[in-house]
Image (cartoon, rainbow over all chains, first blue to last red; front, top):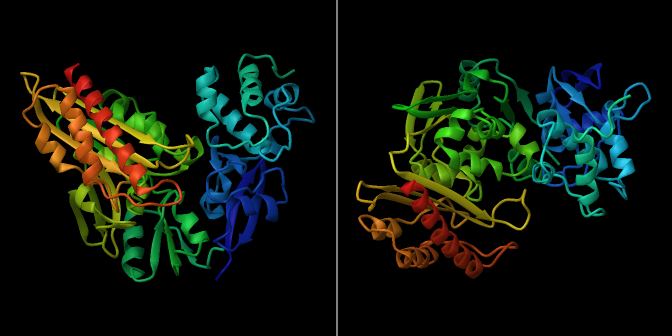
Length: 159
Length: 289
């Protein structure tokens, strides 16, 4: 097996890596680049905790070969905060108690951010459908839905 | 753990087909990989060469013409299909099916060609597309051929693709006037695969009688199961609740589901009967307009 060159941008920072082509995107993010906010959960495209944005789309990084992200712009949970200030969706999650153990949170927030980017005014039902690919075993989802709704309504505008 | 492989990234369809010809004994094609990587990680699939066609733009298109019907390129993602205006207008059942296919993350990356080539009988698109009389175009370095999607689905995780061939395009004819089509799956988790599913398409004639009908069941056997006895029963008949109930009974007899961790065969037969009855009734009402 020959290592291959992968170039991609993660949270605005360009990277050049030599990887075994079987390496998954989540492994590159966590093990090669060292950003451990993205979680590895089920590894079967079910739980959503590995969700990141790839060229603005929410995807599950456990089921994408890193080589398929060649040239892509990847955003992880670490990339949402700007100049030390949490993003509106992050503030909303804190205020609404939208997490307990926190394992699903980074994936949930990335899915929520991608949803709001595509549909800035979702109905409650669209929010619930939008996060159906993310499993949370603590909250019962209602606080998460309220946090996303509050962000959409502009209650957490960036200062 | 995924076994080592050599990763090949062709820059065009032509190059992909050449690579496929060269490595046809020991290669596998990856597109979105939303199903493939799972079975590779489970060690169920080992390959020397992996040919990545995800980025090939030549196969990423949706075309519609009232005469020629709908053509969807193999690397078109599920999310592109569910947000396509022309599909929303002319094939609303495809949008309804895609909306319920896995989760948004999977639909953003997974492709229609990859889904069909995987040959999973619990996959959503195949049964709906067969109800809509879809064809599939496949090809290798020497040329292409078109076959019905029904013939393309051969067995459990097995398709009519031969060595060196890939899926190129899905073709769906324009539905006749007074046609209704519906699809519903039964699952415990919204983003999960269906325990069972039923698709129905009904076309009525000028007198409101059934001119043509198809019922195709998902996860009801080793491949999408077309219930031809129901089709014979309904053709030429008028709207009748009793007929739908009879159709449901036939469907639950003629399907061939298995017992697994998700449901028993008996439970699946029951659900397939109920879904067939409901989908036929809804499709019929839609066809009336």
